[in-house]
Every structure is written in C-alpha cells, then in structure tokens.
Length: 270
Ligand code: ARG
Image (cartoon, rainbow, N blue to C red; front, side, top):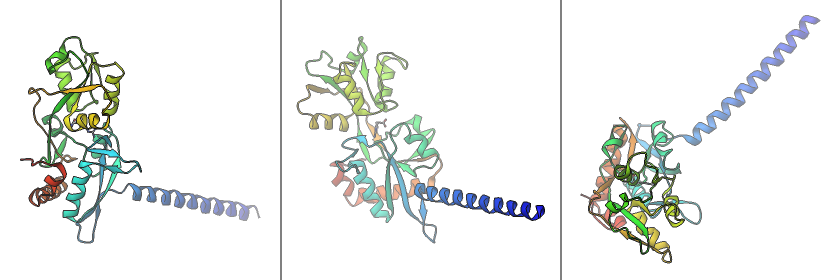
C-alpha cells in the first residue's frame, strides 16, 4: 500500500513537472517567434528582415500620430525592400541600444541616419552610402555665436549622445568637457538649448532644419560652418554579415538606378 502511494505521488510529480516544462517551452517558443529576425524561404533566400531605428529623428525616422514608424529613412528602406521582394518590420529600439541590438541579432540591420565613420567601421559593417548630410549649429535668435569655433569660448553645447554631432563637439571642447550636454535623443538636446542649459545645439542638418520648420515660433536660428565634413549615411549590419550587406547594396543600387532614391530624398548621392 505504502509503495503504491509512493509510486502514485512520484507519477503525479513527473506528470506535473513535464507539464510545467512543456508550458515553459511553449512560452519560450512563442517569444522567439516574435523576436524572430531573418526569415528564409525553402531555398534559403531571405524573405523578411527586422530593422531597428531610433524614431526620434524627424524627418528621417519618427513616430506619426498613430505611433507608426515613418520618415525618409523608412521610405528608403521600404523602397529597397520592395526591389528585393523582402518584407520588413521596424522596431523603435532607441539610439544607444541600437548598436548592441545589431550585435546580438535583436534586429537584422539598423537604419537611423547613421553616419559611416572609421570608428564605427571597426565594429560594424555598412552598406554603400544612400544619403549625404552635415552638421548644423542651432542657436537662440540673436546669439553672439557665428561659427563653430565660437563654441570654444566658454559655451555650453548640446548634442545627442554618441552621435557624430557629439563627436565634433568633443573634438572641439575635449572629450570629457563639462560644457557638453549629451542627452539620449536629439529632441532632448534641442530642449536643453531652449531651456538655457546650452548655448547651442549641434546635429545633422536634416533634423535641425526640420525642427525649425515644425516650430516656426521658436526663436532660434542655424549657423553653417564649412569646417564640418560631409557625412554619409549607411545601413548598418553586424560585422561580417556580408550576405546581408551585399543584398542591401544590391537594393540600394536598384533604387539609385531607377530614380526612387532621388525621388525620396530630393538629391543624388555619389
Ligand atoms: N548622423 C549622426 C550619427 O550617425 C546622427 C544620427 C542620429 N540618428 C538618430 N536616429 N537619432 O551619429
């Protein structure tokens, strides 16, 4: 009798344990499915890609009234995907988390007005350039700042953290200068200037100009400086992912050739 009871309890334990394992396994499976990045068809061709971005960078990538990720970069990737006959899904990962997201495969590639720099090329691979930009300085109306060099004279400057704008300001003021205010997003960098926490804000021309366009009453103006080099945006893939980089390059080539890229951006990138 005792023996049967023990047997019964053990069986019960086993059954519930396997039920538990099964449930966990099932749960896990569905999350991996949600996160699933590259999808391939029977022939191993890529059919779907997950694209990461920082959608706080109008007009390049931002959230519309419905919360959808839209913008010039998104139109470009959509056009590329159409040429390649690939489905794309966008994820608003944020700026700093975007880089590890490409590394750990949370996204297949990133589109986020990312300038191709030597430093980034050490850790990531980029497609051919699809967009050209430059830094632009935003200052309050009537500011005594007239050039980039003027920012050196005891001025506080804001820029989105770890962007090329942040880098040029660090090169000017010193990497660890306490005169640099570097928040997580570009809108926050501009807010710091509007609040008087910075005398100027530095960022990509497209975004700075868009800010002025959308806020005609903001008492601000822009300053161009020839010292800023041209910057080229690329799509960023995990280091060594040649298959995807080449595929995306093929798509970029196609939208350059058929005029779609120019239609979207309004200019031709060499
Ligand atoms: N082009 C600059 C860079 O690569 C800024 C890009 C910021 N993009 C964004 N979506 N926040 O550093």
